[in-house]
Image (cartoon, rainbow, N blue to C red; front, top):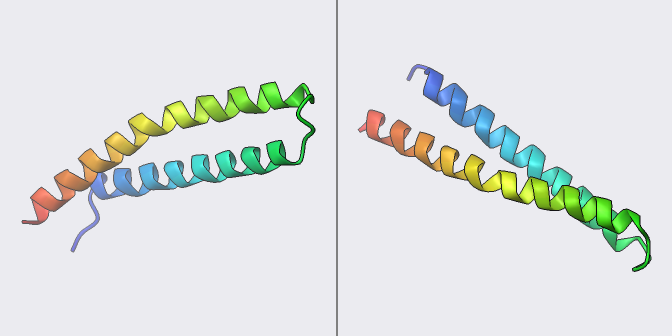
Length: 74
C-alpha cells in the first residue's frame, strides 16, 4: 500500500479535527471554572462557537476524503 496525497490529506484533516476538539474541550473546562458573571465567559463562548462552526466543514471534508480512499481501494 502506498501513501497518496489523499492519504496525507485525510491524516492532516483528522489531526486538525482532533486539535480543534481538544481546544474546544479546554475552553469548556475553563468555562466551568468561572463564575457565571465573569466576562471571560463571553470571549471563551465566542471562541468555542467559532471552533464548533469550523468543525463541520472539516468533518465533511474528512468524510469525502475517506470515501475517495475507500473507492480507490476497491
